[in-house]
Figure 1 (cartoon, rainbow, N blue to C red):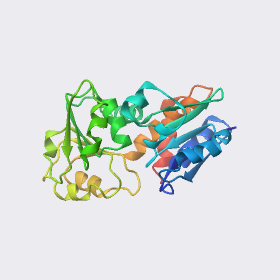
Figure 2 (spheres, rainbow, N blue to C red):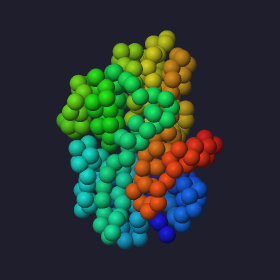
Figure 3 (tube, rainbow, N blue to C red):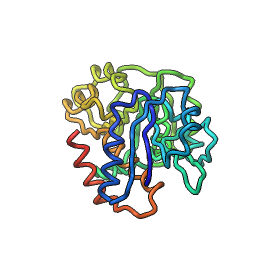
Length: 267
């Protein structure tokens, strides 16, 4: 029996339990998965008390950075980007990694997108770092727009090959100078930006939020003839990578993703 859980706060909106339980059922694996509210500052206490009862944890806001305080073995990727979204146990030892970046790229590819030149990331938290690390080297310029300058150095460490710029938050950036815009901010944080969009938008918007959906930004983007990918795609593909870490069998990602997408589309 494989036992997992998604940790964060707030957590009641999470669709991770639906995704992981449906995956277990589809591939015929005995497993359980739940959502547990773990507020900021309490992850270490929770982990020490519950690690023996679980095989893996998915982490969401506000725990992706806090997870680095745990006594687990982290891979080079999670150390470089300063973000962990997955804790998993193997042969009695716990490891930390991030599947957000590869999940993001897989989500783009599944929708037929792969080539971009200038990317703008809205937000500067753990998901933004993972996306920045994933896009590094595959875009010419990578800009991050954040609300505090204290996160600049952490984001800059994620980018080694693309030209990096950290921008102070403002609600009317030259949005059409970017061909890929990724919104990693909490629900509502980009609403004012939506009000200042031009009459037509040319780039692709990947909004990592999936609940509530559509977001104000996503609706405004589509109203201006823009293309949008919603956060269920990131949830799906990063979740498949998490499952691959804890399962002993290979999974058919193509057929399983189609099945899981159909379930998520009903929610």
